Image (cartoon, rainbow, N blue to C red; front, side, top):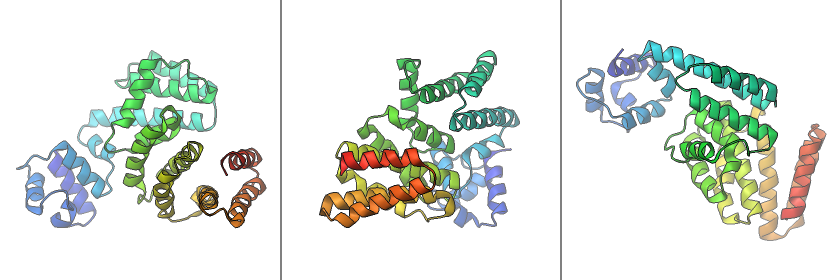
Length: 282
């Protein structure tokens, strides 16, 4: 299927006019000619058009080539297994996946091995196994991304500690700006996780002038049960910032309330970490 035909298929599925579907990316007349195969659309404009209409770039390109669809499906299955093993702290499962990929002939073999190696290093809290070239390649892949996809966003969320604060400020602002209005719960969790980590870094390095953008962006995300924990942490950092600005004790009380609530929820270790953070940074 050609690009114009597939764009038309998606547009009709959404019952949109050509003018509405073109958004502010293309003129309606140019877009109409793209659908007919009379005009060629640039890669940048196509990606912007898909994002504007909330169409998955990966899924769109899969439908252009059945062979690529097969490869991409295998890649997604492997990344899903890797993410699950990582989040559950199952190092043995990550090693099995690593050995499986190493023996295979996937066209994305090098990238998969890099990701698995990084996940294992994070679990071990030992980055000595990652050679400098691999680490730099991974860092550059994220740093130069003008537009994030879900996989790149998740990778950045997991590898945020590899960057210094100034690098993180550049990357995170792009990611937050792109996704803060996204309704996907998993993406909201990643964005809020990134925001919380950046707030931690900013407080540790006393870069308080950077904090408002992240707090305001997090507040624009509607509170739902699935992200309640992140929103609770946000109250902690808001209280700490206001205490530093106004030296009023009730803001510290807000921080202690958050710490108590997290402890009551059964996250004793995390509440102790917040308590230590408050002592060090108030």
